[in-house]
Length: 362
Ligand SMILES: NC(=O)C1=CN([C@@H]2O[C@H](COP(=O)(O)OP(=O)(O)OC[C@H]3O[C@@H](n4cnc5c(N)ncnc54)[C@H](O)[C@@H]3O)[C@@H](O)[C@H]2O)C=CC1
Ligand SMILES: O=C(O)CCC(=O)C(=O)O
Image (cartoon, rainbow, N blue to C red; front, side):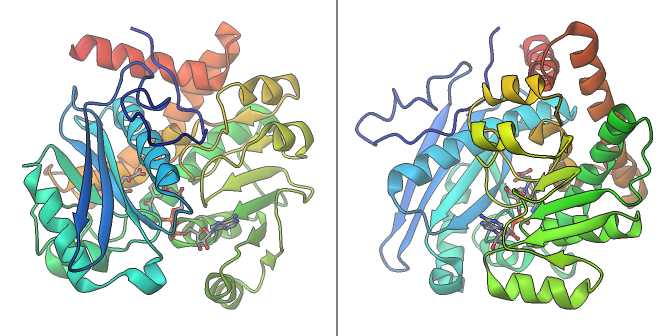
């Protein structure tokens, strides 16, 4: 079978079935548009593929400038979840959801409960969780409308915020990349630009600082920036990490930041972060390759959260789950070694794992 990564392109809504992000093989199975007039809810749930199991993926609450942007984002994010869970060896398919709106303004308990009822109508084909703009407390409210929700608070019987495990997976993957690029996993003195200090970026920064790295951080949201500066006085908050002299660029905000321009100009030797869908198009990898920049594919590095969410359905102890997240170091290393030995990009090497898993499941 052929599989391909998504492209961060805009598209209009005039033909959903021929949307560029709907037609890449394997194509999406189901896309659900949800509207609740009473609460103002407008959401889209995308189930990309359920070959390996129910489609698990978080809900992003974001003030999209246009509905077409929301659709493109949810299609790309849900495809990424198929790849992520397949590569992580989980019996899960890929799905994701977006709620259109500003979480700081539009998020209400009633809206989240209404959204939970929509998730419930899918009967478990889609299991939701957190993402940009949503938290475990929000999952508790969504959980009043459905049982198909992961990462509720521990007090409410869930596994809690998945950001620490996501950050641990990214950190572990970075160690694998550092070993291959610098011959050592020692990050002492390495300059890491963390873009976005929300739930994951903050946790990642803590691990990096403990490992002796120099952290530069950027976030346009003043409360996030201020909380970060207060918590990590040893880090430096800057307006923009991308143009700084970095050893590592760690995108931890929105996708599509690894553009041709960034790939052609960054000083970083490694790109490894939590953001989903980092490459503006898969072709950017050619520029990264020509400049000797090592990219750890996002869905390999950031699988810690979905591993934790999946652990709710398993009888794993916390330590067993954490060990699976730390094993992302070996998986990332395997991807980079395969790329190097086969003279292919790391994206192609990761897609080989995904294609093999999906083909054998079929
Ligand atoms: N929460 C999780 O466990 C997982 C998250 N991810 C991905 O990691 C990324 C971050 O997720 P969270 O930390 O949960 O989200 P979050 O909403 O907690 O934090 C995102 C932060 O990025 C900031 N931001 C937005 N645009 C920015 C820009 N241009 N430059 C710098 N900062 C910017 C926001 O102000 C916010 O503080 C997202 O792409 C998400 O899909 C992936 C796997 C799991
Ligand atoms: O991390 C989570 O809570 C769920 C998985 C997910 O949505 C993601 O990996 O992007």
